[in-house]
Image 1 (cartoon, rainbow, N blue to C red):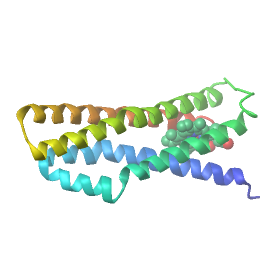
Image 2: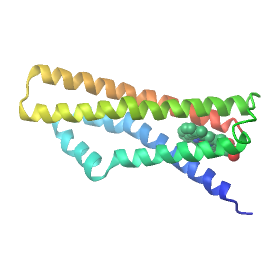
Image 3: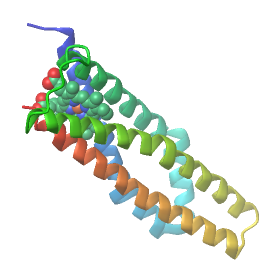
Image 4: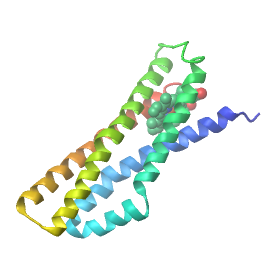
Amino acid sequence: MFSIWMLIKALHILGGTFWLGGAAMIAAFLLPAAKKTGPSAGVFMGHLMRDLKLPLAMNLASWTTLLMGTLLYWRITGGFKQWSLHWPGGIGLLIGVISGVIAFLWGTFIQAPNAQKLGALLVQMQQSPSPELGAKVQAMQKKIYLGAWVGVLFLVLSLIGMTLLH
Ligand code: HEM
């Protein structure tokens, strides 16, 4: 029979799938392609970020996963009271939750501000290019590329942990 929890779980899994899939696509394909194509990548990335609102879609997916996941966790622990630390289910779930929260905090407080800084540097670079500015852009790009893989790593850990539950 249908219950609201089925919908919550479906939204949680859909959000998580979009979040991890999107993060992996960005880290493995979009960012390396942008790096290889140099200045011409700016127009493509600008369209993707501003007009197609990729950051908004990723934020929606991560917030949905986190909020629905918190409700599921509240339910499964009887209102955050009955913690199970049995291997693999309980421990897997806990590892999954911790990794998911780290991925969320990483994306929100490290990656997003760095992406904004890069955007500002690129605008400066168009207005008054200089070798120092070019070096700053490259350093920031490197940080963002590495950071993207850190996020993917925590999301993969989260997914593996979650699936140990059943
Ligand atoms: C961020 C914090 C997260 C919390 C608090 C959380 C919480 C939960 C909970 C409590 C369940 C068990 C639901 C049940 O069986 O009733 C669950 C299942 C699941 N979660 Fe998460 N989750 C989080 C992040 C993620 C992420 C990032 C992903 C994917 C990348 C994900 C994918 C899944 C999947 C696939 C299941 C189903 C596992 C199964 O039934 O075998 N979760 N989650």
